[in-house]
Length: 386
View 1 (tube, one colour):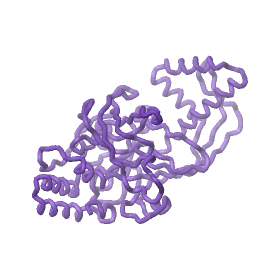
View 2: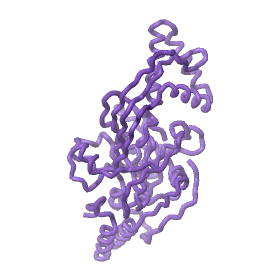
View 3: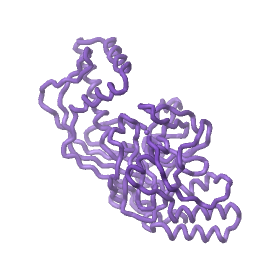
View 4: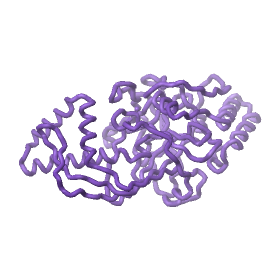
């Protein structure tokens, strides 16, 4: 997630990563058995990758609290509550999963839920720092507190975090989700927002901050969109080639052009347990940055096998890895929300055209490409095959 503007708070959004199984009917295409080229994967994927804005405005009410280092409990100081105004915009990536306007992204891209735990951590650190200054505790005591926290089981840590977040409450919060219009001629953020498509929230796991299921489904009032092909499951192994397509902040030169998605490649570096150990998070060495959140992770057939969620490591020394939620979690949420996925006419015609092109049936390939273009919402992806 990329933070574009903030009038009061500076929040480092903590992105997390992602579960269940499902039953799905997926379309198949009559393609040649050979793997697509990278250019073919780009052609199949880019039209269905979108940029998302999340605007949040309102107040956060904070009740001053103390932290008892012996009991590891947050306690109220009984002081006057402080109201903090917030007016912030975040940016992330999403991808179309249904021609009927359904888009998958990260929950932390399109909800304000990560703001409270991030602010809690900042305030918690300030409380401990003040205790050190007042000589109530020593720096060694802080280390002891941290060790005690980390030695607790997951359920205890989650409960403590929830107790702390009771001291931070949203008030009169208004949020809007906007999907950029790829056909816009806007040259600044306000223009992109004005020309964009309003999106509604379909659903996301309520406790995604704690259970790592950082996935959300949003919807725009558009049809005939170029949905991406979804793998049945994340059947990739260490060393397998993979690709990502998104809008990393480090690739933005200026606000004149925020519509060009960035294509990167890498491989599966490892698998990591989720917090509850109920699924595996995919680790990759593909280039990932803020703004990549919500990007599709693709296998060598151009099928979505996961969704990029966060990065870790020190980029200054090149020690940087990206992490993705596997397809099983995405499929689970789609099933829970009764969203029927499918590639639609655009992808079917495009893939047929690519197969014909690779077999040197150029005339028939052009016909398929033209059919793909006419089958797509002209307002949304009018130039996708130019």
